[in-house]
Length: 213
Image (cartoon, rainbow, N blue to C red):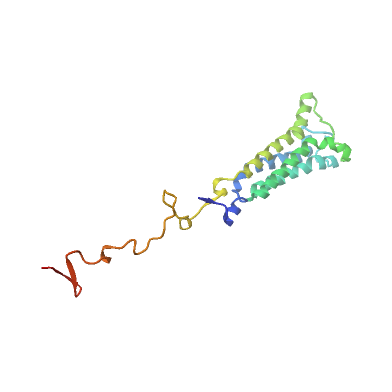
């Protein structure tokens, strides 16, 4: 039978293989690095928001791009190195919050006084839409999706984590099919042939049997 009363069972509910969140963690690190670095290197190849000057720091870039990018990287690192469901779940939630901030951050920037991140610098409507998606909207949605997938994976418990099989020595005693518990055997109930008297027709004399006349 399966039991969940032992300390090993309770520990198994919290532990997981480190490889469980590795793929999602790596992808989150890559996407977070993209979101944090692209505003500074994008102007070098004409893919940027204003001001389109490479490596120029602004408060808006720090709050709306660098901060969520760093949070996604940290969440991905936690997923990669964690062997605990609790800490891995924390990493997934952190990455999900970072992705959500990429999507809604610019809407809250003006009321919160964070600053203006600028406008896309593309020369066509298609390029401007691509910049919008790559810097904020699509980037945030993909990060949230990966974080949710990672959260689902780390929350799944395998059969070994749910319970462990009891050793044979600790197994419960079996009972007959009738449902009545078997009673322990005694020496009177299972006597060997050597425990009985001599066969009929003879008697003991000095420890040996003499045939009758």
